[in-house]
Image 1 (cartoon, rainbow over the protein chains, first blue to last red):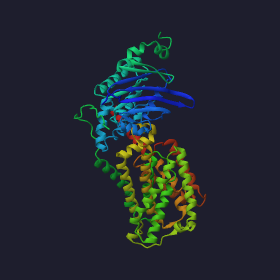
Image 2 (tube, each protein chain N blue to C red):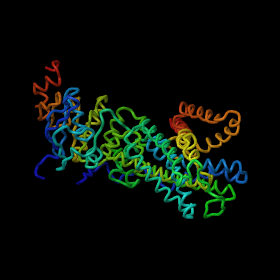
Image 3 (spheres, one colour):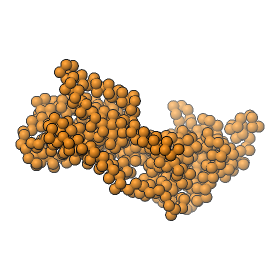
Image 4 (spheres, chains in turn cyan, green):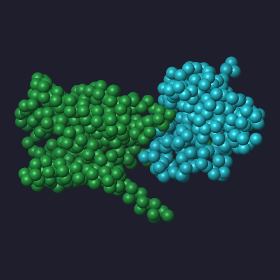
Length: 242
Length: 343
């Protein structure tokens, strides 16, 4: 490798009927790192996510993943190339059991039933849902649903996992569990892009942070530098934090 | 492209094993034998054998519909088209080329599949009720068309297949042979569904039904999965149409295209039996076909169409109180009892 980034977003623009949700944003992620994306509500974080995973198309700019231009590829092809994602509003397949939810993912790389089943067992164990494997996903608690979202992303054997506010609504113990899960997977080489509101989480998991505000990247750097940047404090935390 | 297969938990530890395919098939063969029991008892009673023959055939057709309508969640009301294509194709191949219906069902299925893919390509862009309405409109358009294509369909007068009994003609003197044939076909469709439900395509169809965006994020080509499900469903429906043709031997457009009797009936049977379940369509057919026959006899003379009113009421009640059908309610009850024992 020539040190070129693993994922690189170049001058990404997305317009919605006059509103510029993402305005000329560029950043890169290196293999094996955890990059956090923060910013106030409506800053364009989820839009940026959807541009990377293909749920939305770019109005302008480019996205390169593992040396390949992916901006024109549909979302399923990007998933096949190695991108796993969670949704801000968890979208479990509620008519299926927990295991079947995960098997929908593991079937991507394991075409035989028994192989997809065994791989799903490993994934469920990893996220701590093995005891809930045969329960309909509609019966899972909020915290279990969040872990199922991560499990479904992990099931694809991805190169990169994008987490969209997986901690929202979890209590302190549950948050710690998910942080440990992310760190454990990262320790084995998994790359993450994380949208997170909880700054404790941002500090705990990420070395590098980028900040969006009104669709513009206003800061980038280490977690401690960025979180003490006065501009970030003003945009993101408001006056109270001053 | 390299795929990072980062190591997960210890791969050698002891874990739950999936139910083996043999166990699964064994279970459904048992259930099918149960469904065959009435024929074993009443094989000599022509009235009941006729009803059972219809019930098994419509069980098979509802099961075929269930592949795309239940597992895939695409509520087609246009399956009458594939049914009619199967029926007309088998009749034409048998009458014009002397091809045995046993073989004629295969080109019939291929043609039904081709038409299904051509129809579905544009209509699968529509979601939910809009897809249902579009498929229903296509059914009505084909109904009208069949009246004009005299050389293929015999127009409004229809096609008459003369009674020449013989195994290779798929025409039998003994009615129970038809019932057994239809039961065999139904068993094949049920077992195909059992395999499908375990396979990759089956899981993908369910994922597409549940949430298309999440399905795409799991690497699923949604349109391709829908088309594959529709193709399989239409092929089996076409074969069912061919078997139907050799049973009734009088084919005219109202017999093949009337929504209440064909296109909507497949969906109705699945809904009442349990949409998306494997045995639901079978249970639904074994219930609805005899009830409809009885109602037609009891009300048909006094109030024409009265049986449809009663069937409509049954459907409304089922959709209000039995959302997952009879099989769904039964499975739910079993789970509740099990959970109570455990706690």
